[in-house]
Length: 178
Image (tube, rainbow, N blue to C red; front, side, top):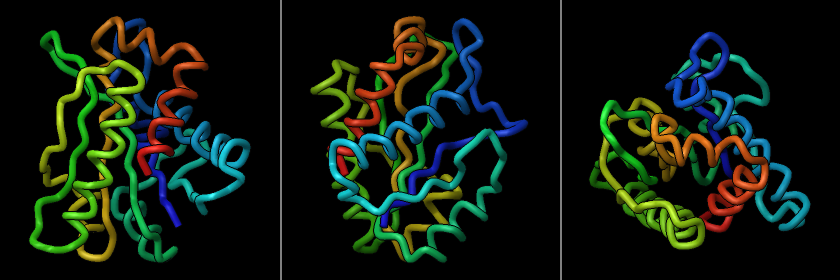
């Protein structure tokens, strides 16, 4: 069981980028495409559950509770980055703890990063540690990663997110990384 968490939602837009592109919309589009590709290309190889299927706000604690309740094998939170500076690329975050799930999360994160950067041409920003709630609350029982799929404040990457074929490519990269 894989829990895909499209970040933000509802009144929480997440970052707002170039041309008013909203993080909550991009990540939901990618998550829905992951579901579709898993069914059409991978013949439902993964049992995938989303934390949200539409534009609703789900609390961070409910996102982690859902993963625990479903007894998931991996938790992947999808986000878009934003910066005041000229920044671009994809990075993956894991929670730094001394347990097997952190090591597994690093491997999963590296795999997703490798698929996204080598196949799609994004700059690789690495696997990093962060104290994000969805990672911190999940790591004790499940490998958990948070994927920052590029900067919506960088025009080239924001424009990338506007094309359905690119959403499909990102979704496929995440799936292949898993």
